Amino acid sequence: MVKIAPSLLSANFADLKKDIHSIEIAGADWIHYDVMDGHFVPNISFGYSILKDISQVTSMYLDVHLMISDPCKYVDEFIRSKASLITFHVEAIEDETKIRELISHIHKANIQVGLSIKPATPVSAIEKYLEDIDVVLVMSVEPGFGGQSFQEQAIEKIQKLSSLKNQYHFLIEVDGGINQETGDICKKAGADVLVAGSYIFNADNRKKVIDSLR
Ligand code: DX5
Ligand code: ZN
Image: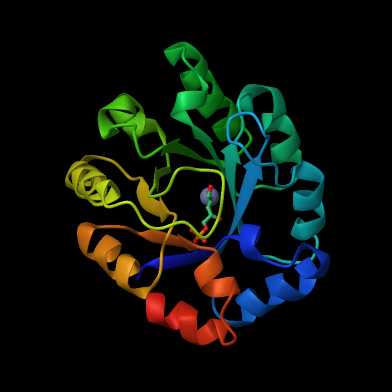
């Protein structure tokens, strides 16, 4: 069954503990934690110290999405802050060797690794890393903000990744503009994990919305 990962970006930051428990009770699988540095994307969200505090109030799987220009510099802080999965953007690091080093550095800490691609980046940009990673995060909006509309070109990428999946073990995660309709299209294309921020946190009945995505 598809996993549901509510994005805390759309939670009430003044009431995070309550919002985390609400999605936990509602049956969410992962917590999607969007880190933005105001440089890789034109927005600032939260950093590793809030993640550490969150890890102390929940046992949920912590899915960290780094939208930052220098993931190598901060990765150890996110490791120490109890991330379960650390996903960084392939566009953030030019050098293949550095990408490979970062993947193995995170794995050595016994943490899962994801690679993310922005809407304009093709699957071919990450193909050579597929055998070494646990998750591919396909962005279906331009990273930076919640509440944007789903961009259709993500579907072809999910299909392409799905066709490559048999040879490897990675999960396909989709992020941005997910609601019941777009979630359904992504599932049919082969998505394993759906991230949803505004669709879940703006709903009065979060369980109903999470169930509707499955
Ligand atoms: C966007 C973030 C997403 C965002 C999704 O840059 O990576 O995780 O919170 O929000 P919705 O589901 O509202 O598009
Ligand atoms: Zn995200």
